[in-house]
Length: 420
Length: 192
Image (cartoon, rainbow over all chains, first blue to last red; front, side, top):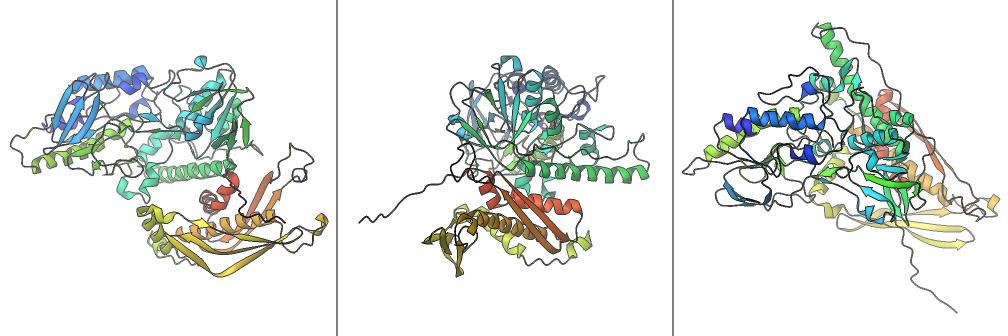
């Protein structure tokens, strides 16, 4: 967004609570790699030029990537500036920060969709003696108590942690609710390559039937390991991970699991196969037209998700078998500093493709904000180009004597929740 | 695609009304709060009769067109008179009715013409639980198996997706697969 504003000669500042790429520095576990391949992170005027386009960035590499971009575009970043309050003024917005107040006519909220791990209310019922961690607190398996681990949630975070912790020698039980199964590679290419080429990632928000649903789809069961291994439920079962249904409550220290696991797996298999059908159909069309370079391996389908015959419906957490619980139950944005009345009854910002329901206020980096890829690094460019155009015409339209504007954000870049 | 949109499907489900209700209720979530009711009178032995007529929803009292009554009892092998289905069989009836209604509604929404839908249900239970023989055996079902036979103008995958979606949106499926707080109170006691 800063690059797009600069190109339009719109005076702005980027407020960052820590250093550039703060979330990537401080809120990620040690082994995490981006779930999107290196080549896929294309930002306006910036792309991967290293020797491993198909690899997946480590966190230090991700930090360096953003630092490099900030330098390249000379982004006017004010580091170590924490936003503590945003309110509406007559001319625009007043932004209170740890180092004084800013006034601006337009404001872009690019603080990210994953500021706070969400943990169910019944987490309070965990018996004492069982350690509870969020993904922000988890660093590596060595820091866990010896003994069994219950990982709650089987989206990107949950399956990656289950994989890593089971491999460390601790017995993992994985509570599985709604999830999106995804192979890392299909027919010789990364799944992101297919989703990019077929236009799935570029699908616009006006085109989907149920946008609320599309914005709440869980993250894909992917990992960015060098060996490109899958982290779907079958892969985890093969490692020895025990699958149980969604954790629905804790009563008298006993965890209760839903009996819906077979259907959750069936829904996910069907959904994955619909994507593979779409890919095969697209590949068939383009192979015929000779537009696909190189020959593709033939289409195939993955084995159905294997579900144990009668997965346990309860697990006594007082027995000592489970020593740690990891809440991989999702994340939410933090708007505690936002004093502009733009939240709906579910605490989400009311916006139309990032144009917030308050003049001159914009949003970046949210799930399916303008496109399916809006929350990915690769999605920021297209969204920023369109929103900066809207912002520029908004500034042109407001009759203020001095045409200065500052666009401030609580974090330097759209926090891109490929990991969440 | 034009044949798809013009395709006439009639499963007897008014999808427009359902979608309209969804739209209206998403704007007025209070009206979406329903209370379903049943009242049960003991007849004799294990025979009881449950009546269902009124319910609350859309912000006001509502009523079925007529009162429905259901007899529940136990079979003769339990030394009962078998004047009705067992309560656990009524649970299966509820699950079957809910999933099948879901299949029909979703088929209509997805423009799939159903010709026949038949669900067969089986709930496995070890009655050592209810008889108090073995405290480690639960009272309720260990497993419920539902199998659908569906004849429709759709692919196998589309039909599987219908059935999966109907489970995802089913109230009774949720009631059975997830815990529910149940509060039982005693209102009036007459003692001689």
